[in-house]
Length: 285
Picture 1 (cartoon, one colour):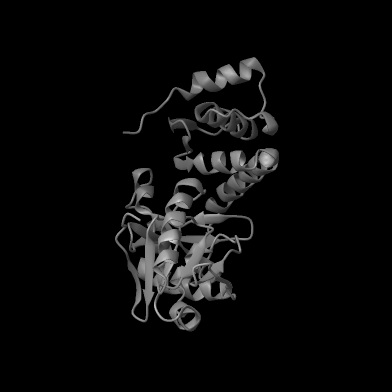
Picture 2 (tube, helix red, strand yellow):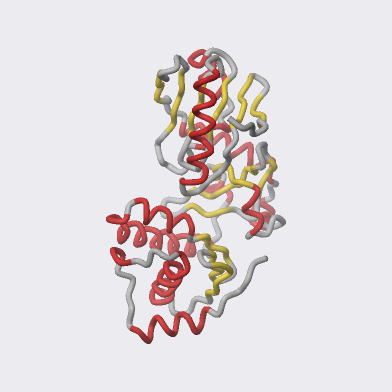
């Protein structure tokens, strides 16, 4: 159950002590890290209403922010902490500005993009308000507006304002995804299997699973139907299924990366065939 922590006293204590967010000295303890980031957010926007719902969970002006991804990114690259946090806060402000601006559908229709998210997002977000469609492997497809300065999650109300529903948004998003139709990197495994990787880090590596022509493009390379690993938003690894040792090793890697990487999606493989994408049952290696 979510709990609301007494933010006011905590932030006042930080300000009283005169602490500042020196990025190379950010606290390692998650709760203190979250407090430091929130103090900086309030310094930049004193009128914001912010409260904690957990050590790294923040509700800012009614919007949920999960700081756990930021925390992991900072401590994976501690020397880049200042740059990472500064970029995060700049993107956050750009998103606030974008959300307060109505985007005409004539503009939005070419900027709607799909993202695959775990069902667990609805532990913190209102399922009825998030524009989404169900998917496989305990995931959903959500839709975002890809603007020059920010990526904004779309709500059901926004779609209704444009006169479309989630199914129509999905058609547009998959069409727009074709702009990211680049060639994968092909790797031969030591066990004899093959793998195809997308690693553009453009926010849509995992989303490439939704490309309509994915099976047509990769099946000749991977020898027919194939499995796709999406441990996180910025990961896509398609593998052939012919060599069992290779599949077992990739399953172990997927589960490890799902626990470790920012923006986790699924520890399970996705199966891609001519008929489309289906889920798989997680098995012990």
